[in-house]
Image (tube, rainbow, N blue to C red; front, side, top):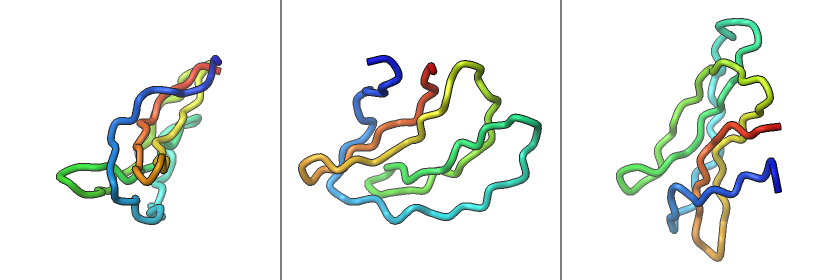
Length: 85
């Protein structure tokens, strides 16, 4: 239904992602900024940390972060996206 993010995975690998990295969030650069958290991406045959960043808010949307899902022993990376409320 609406609001459900069901895009195909951007990567499917056999190696579990490392534990979440506790990144230091810098000071909010302007009022209302939305923090887009970093995530473990897949590049060059291994997990690589993709740092987070501040983004302008988008009225009527929320940000759905990147996420890894285990499907039958394979790890699927789903990309982040702005989802209409």
